[in-house]
Image (cartoon, rainbow, N blue to C red; front, top):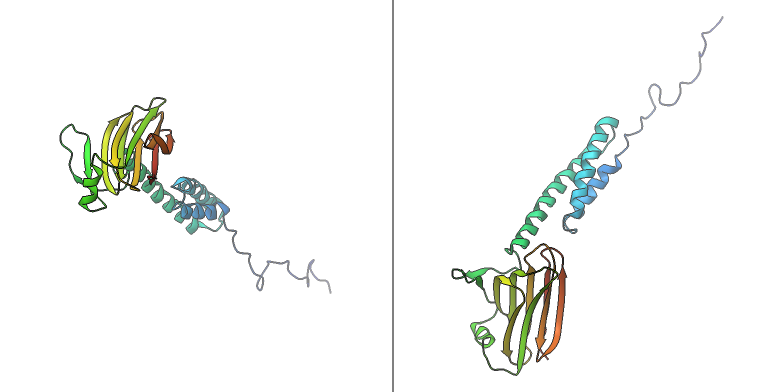
Length: 228
């Protein structure tokens, strides 16, 4: 009795019942998109842009290759767009001076004064002492522009926690104050232009005590400390 060719042989692996089908492979760019989207919270939005790019590429590969990871890629794209938009909004507010030093305006400035009174973080007595013309030390607050920086969009200073702010200030800027012993000093300035650099400097009794330089568009310099 003759048998047909191949009769009685075992079927190859993966054929018929009883053989597991390997799971689909997870797309690597989908994983990367999700990770970059999550880290956008702590990277000022820089990785969020990459999350959007990697996510869109991963979605295209998943449709073409039938690989796994669609949910991760989609989550990375959504997170990337949301965080990118939030960080763009934040930097727009910083550049416009609304966020700035993080204080809330208390009184509107008079017409053409370019000055805003801010909410103090100390009792009124500290403000009165700030404006006193007598004291043990002479403090000079300076903001100096160079390489094309001609004005500051925002200058904030504090002496003994009496906070004041000026906007649209031509550079160079200086403010001399007489103070007593060991007051808290703070100076914050933002370049109003897209070029040059701004130097913040605090001088006590003709001696430069603290200095900081901000370079590039809309750079911010900050100095803080106590008098000797």
